[in-house]
Amino acid sequence: MNVDELYSQWADTVQEVVQYVLDHEPGLLHGYELISGGGDRHGALEWMFYSRATPTDPMDRLAVIGVIPEPGTGSADFEFGFGGRLNDRHARKIASYRVFDLGNFDEAGVMKGLGDALDQAESLAEEDLDAVIPSLAW
Image (cartoon, rainbow, N blue to C red; front, side, top):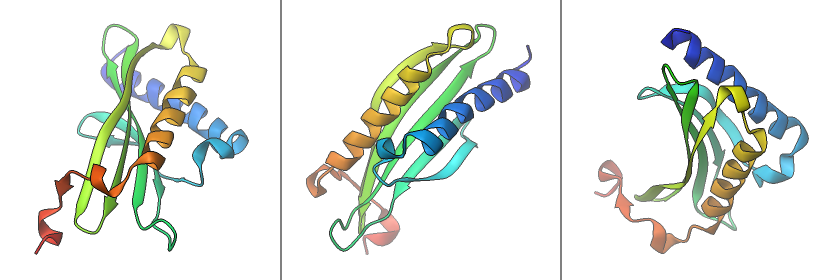
């Protein structure tokens, strides 16, 4: 399988899990919306879930599934990330990291990784936002 086919196969495989969560496990998402469905981000496939700030929670929050297929192995590195933004402060961190194999794919493991990332995004507090967005800081 060439690299393009491998990326396509992983994109389809993860999209099935994401679609299952959207259709059957909406409680897992804490009200987050899927805003990026398997797009390329610096060579990784990325699914991003977003929660916009509200009057009772002024922080924008996100959770991410990042997938980097490993050509020649049939496996892929998965990063489950989370982050938040409030005014000119932001953070983006890794919740967990796993390696999955196409031949023995663990859908439940992906759902758990996403759930953990969403939980950690929800637990972010203003003091956790440890970076500045330069264009917004002045």
